[in-house]
Length: 186
Image 1: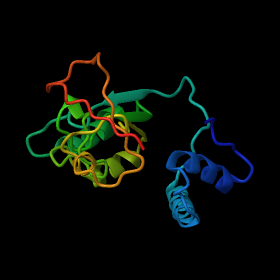
Image 2: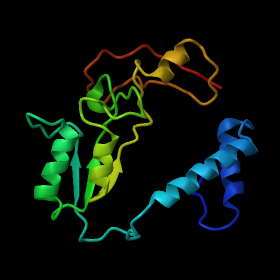
Image 3: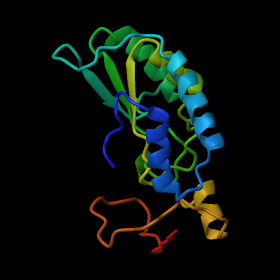
């Protein structure tokens, strides 16, 4: 699959791509829900952004739990520090995984819908986004054995799009033993 076109019948292109992924189970109802969500998200974009990066852009990359204080969680602490010391220097903040996680320094995600409670909450990320351009790692290629998705998979609940496979060689050391090889084909 190539990139989605800028012009043309976008709904049809989206339907074609998702039909390939979901094997004919992607319906007009699903498409309408997706389009509604995309339109809602588009309305939330409040700032016009440059189309391309240039030499004036500076990116700070940090984990969500790197800034500590005695009375605040890491994300609100980072927000204060960023506002006071970094905002005039860094135009972009690349926030490494802030989801609840079980291992691999945040890359073994338990729940993609939550902010790790020990780091902060969604409001902290929203506040940071009001004064910087934010980037995140979605980490869709990792999943915790403690995640609801994985638990449901082990119970053999009907998934059509979940495929888990592990490489024989793990090139990056992780803090837990290598899990059992699991495959799912649909």
